[in-house]
Length: 309
Length: 287
Image 1 (tube, helix red, strand yellow):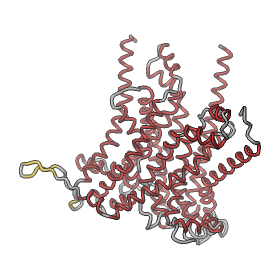
Image 2 (tube, rainbow over the protein chains, first blue to last red; image 1 turned 90 degrees about the vertical axis):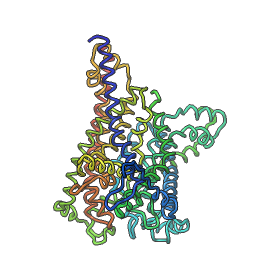
Image 3 (tube, helix red, strand yellow; image 1 turned 180 degrees about the horizontal axis):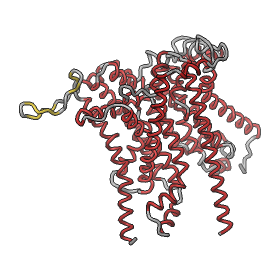
Image 4 (cartoon, one colour; image 1 turned 45 degrees about the vertical axis):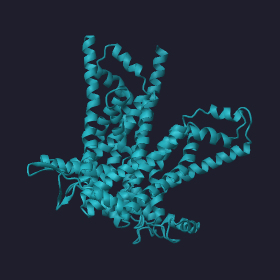
């Protein structure tokens, strides 16, 4: 094969490698969003919805209905739902960070021979059905369930009731508490894994240097380890926060009437009320809510890609 | 630690604190799974109060047509999803790692990563509405197995890309260059040099996307049509109504199959790794 022929082949191969997944994503990821945006400004008409642009009396008319968005802003119900979605996602993220950071830290500092097994044990639940694990909490938290009995025996329910996470002692299921617990449980590995991969790569000589300069282990931890793991904290938090905002299954199985979340609202608008334009407007508003964390996340993801090994 | 020796007692304390925290974390992660398994053997009218050992829920499972049909459909979708996700994900990972500059790369990287975190209700809704529009305009596709597969593929591709990408980044590009210098064509380079080196990553991407697809509720709910009820949809609709012992029995079987699968896969991978280390050592001695 000639050199020019080889170069030509490489170029064609490269074009195909890029084009196939690219076109696929444009068609099935980006285009659907355009459709959602379009429908969100349409109006339901019986079982179907209006088109935006229509030929009427020989003239093109644009028919944008912003009524859905106005309702989203004006109606208290939607607004409080948005707020509570953000609130529960934030609380979950903090809980995951609180449990996950020390966890990842001690994993990364465990014996090197032990680490693959420890990592495997974090990923293993991830391989068994998420739906079933959430369902399991239902059994654990209902009256006389193991977790419910343990929490009540320890008197923790008094504390939870005092913080307002449960309405009254002894009532654990279908409360903000069961919702946050379920989400923390589900998303904890998403926090641990990026933190672990970050912390295990840290140069321990930096800690030695800090200790040589007179820092105690505690000071060294806060001034060296934590700032260096910033990227891992951001990645883990985004991986927990963003999906939590739009979570549907967990609030449906573990949450109660007082823990309305936006993913559930979208679902109900679509499946129960059959109001497609409204469901689309809710979806667009949800994207707006998570667009900033989403940008942070994809920036981080891109940086991780571009880093040469 | 060279200078300022920390007090040994303090170090001991930290070590025990660390072990305690890890123990607590693993306990938290595994308690629900253990509970599911134990209660699948529970003979009691109240599902979460232990009475006595029984296998009757497993017997009931054998005649549960709804669940079995769902399982069969889910397995077929998961198989197709995993295979196609690995193909598309590998292409996307190659594009991102090997070609560092092309037009629209930022958008591409964003679109690849977004489904990882994007709430599934949004992905499901938007994909469904596009398919409905397409159906109105073109007359196809009918909603059913194929449309569920499309949704799962979107999610699976994102996960497969991340897994393969991580492996590609650690590869030594010089090996591929050497093969090319020795006259291998691009395709030969790929399947003789690159593919064996990323085979493990492809296997774990396949397993990961398989379980993702087998587990998915939200996308399937949006994209399924009449007669296409996957197992998670059946389980979800039962779980919504309350505790259901047959769900526990299914869960136990899934946990069993997955644990065996993962243990066997990681054993095979470890064995292959050792074999490769031996080969490298032998080659080094011979050379």
